[in-house]
Amino acid sequence: MQVKPLNDRVLVKPLSKEQSTATGIIIPDTVEKEKPEKGEVMVTGPGKLLENGTRAPMTVKAGDKVMFKKYSPDEIKVDGKDLLIVDESDILAIIE
Image (cartoon, rainbow, N blue to C red; front, side):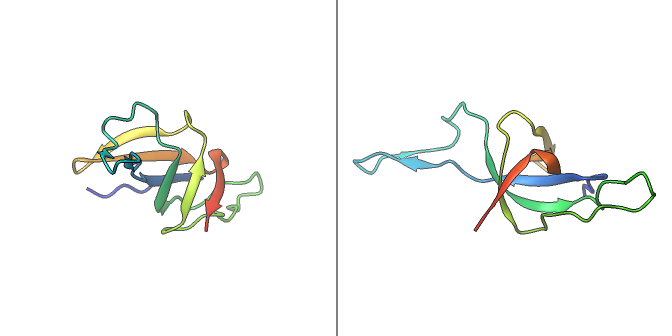
């Protein structure tokens, strides 16, 4: 199944939060109860429709790694994968 976000929405794949302790024990992201705040942009919508009928260009593009507001994304499942849909205005930064 393919998902194409509408307007200024962005489809994001959450980045793994896998961590390790000082002794080398890996703590998988399934243990984490926190919502993700970072992800990789998979697909963007065409941009916000302005009052004059034109579309505002998107600031992010596919492949960008981004930080977004913790509780803003909507969680969806596509082909068994957990993905997020985020409004572009809820994206705080592009990670370089």
